Image (cartoon, rainbow, N blue to C red; front, side, top):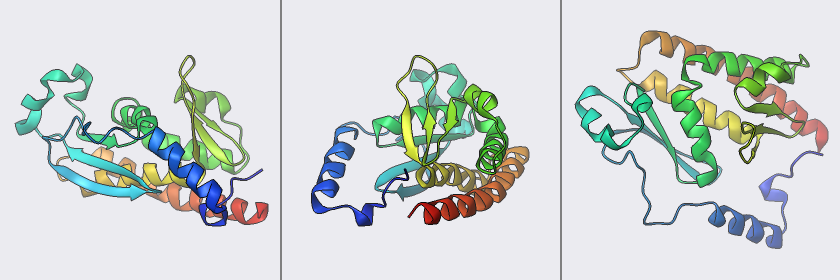
Length: 195
């Protein structure tokens, strides 16, 4: 069963959705841990603020309180919602070098090819109406396909806009955007079939 679009929800359902969103939002006093870095891009995706930051050498002194593996990450990602922070962390640490492979696996899965095992190595599962992110032993994050693809597109757009990102990563993100166009078409067609 496909998820209903927010516009087709009753007033009561919309109010409940707002309450759930507020439950998973960070308190106003908690700001981005990367607030000292220059903001590269900011985007609101389905009501959630996402930010990408430039992690250039002159700002590395701000990294003293962060894990060592973040020091060399060219882009930093942040979401105001607690539930998306794990995805942002994976985007920075685990997925950045294989983002095009993830997009390719998602595309092929939507086209009917079974990549369940390989997607699970990235903590991802494909379902009829959503993507699920989470490794064993962690609570899963359910995200509509459109939302998840918008997050990946935000990352790719950020990398293509950044001047200091290695050219190979920019090429990777160009391939990601190609896959995103195809994925969005498939997801749109599936959504239309289910309504």
